[in-house]
Image (cartoon, rainbow, N blue to C red; front, side, top):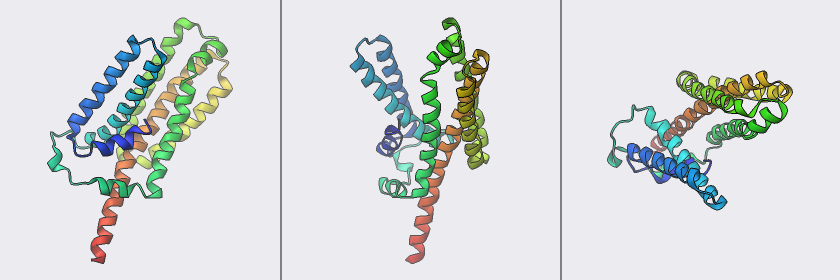
Amino acid sequence: MIVGAPLMAMLTLRLPKRLTLMLALGVFAAGHVVVALGSSFALLLGARFLTALATGAFWAVANVAAARAVPHDGPARHSGSLRSELAALRSGRLWLVPAACATTTGGVLAAYSYISPLLTGRAGLSAGLLPLALVGFGVGALAGSIVGGRLGDARPHTVTIVAAAGATLLLLAICLLSGYAAATVLLVALLGFFGLGATIAALTLIPTSAIALTRRRHSAAAATT
């Protein structure tokens, strides 16, 4: 996903956004079918890599497309260029946003990777109740995406900082209270809410910062000429 988001966003720069989103979702769905039916580890690894690549492409393009109510646009309506996109990547301030996003998301997903042994082995939750705990994380992540997206439009910096700080405190609380099943299940659901909320809010800052930097550079160039 780290590789796919910026790379696929630039490679599909001149494609209609609807087409890019449909292709990304198609690859994502096909990859999961392969994962479900396959039995080879190499096949599983390859399919997961492709689905992650498609996921990164989808988030990068959908974030921009959603801000325009997804119009039926084509290549001729795009005013940017690959050179301007690459020039924006030279800004150190721009890289702070994906760095914060990667740090928060990495911490949340690292904890999520060990939810099963944490709940069954340490908290003592029965294996039959584990899917419900995972559903709680999913519901929290969905709610966090919605709330983080809505509030992030108005105050992206504030939402990003608050959500990331909340996710950090929740991770610490899980470490301290992981011996209690009910508390851990609740904390896992809240972790999905704050963790995904921080990611959505941070993602809104990336194109906004890039556009601002490009406009500032164009204004400076126009002033000098």
